[in-house]
Image 1 (cartoon, helix red, strand yellow):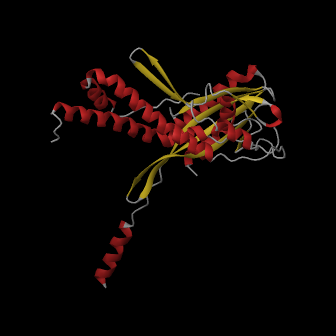
Image 2 (cartoon, one colour):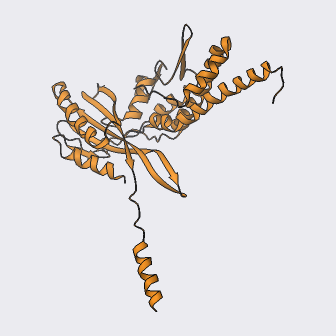
Length: 134
Length: 168
């Protein structure tokens, strides 16, 4: 799981909008959000392993009152700006006539850079020094 | 939602096209057609991966599209790629806009574009399966390669023709 995605979920859960990952089991009251890690969008390889990986994630908010729209946009985009920098966009803006809900969807790209492994250089030196003494 | 494809190395291709003179417009159009064909193939391959099920409402927000809805997307063989010619400018777009209407379950008439959008972005009662975003993500490089191949092949043919049919 990319660390940026975990940070995004945590930041969205701190907002006034109730957020859940990968959907809800029952319909929440009022407006609600869903955050989803969609798919791996790209990868940079080297030394026979994956180095940097990019992922596409999406943030959906459903709400019934049009008066809430501006506040929701401001809240979500502030979080996206903080976590994803400039790599996000409002992807779709829909109205569901069957439920009367408005639906906004943002898409963002998250980068997952693995932390470099610590080189056991110091340990090797100690071992060789110990071997020398023996 | 329109997705814009950006190409790298366009300056080099632009130079080649400029040197082609009156053939440039035709070559550019053909290259775009080939690029769009690659993207269409990618969209179709992702449509085939859409998971379907019969309607049920037991789990809120987790419904999958019906087989009829998937069939509606698969049935759009021609017309998914559109070309607009405006003077010497040629634009192409790939998508379900203007793809017509179908009759789905319970005799409802739905626009194909609406079905595609609902599956791609999800709704309050249906989980999202972003097939189009996946296609754009994985198809961009293939489309770029197809566009470059056409331009480079025609440029090489022009050089060969100017050299009297002799290749170096």
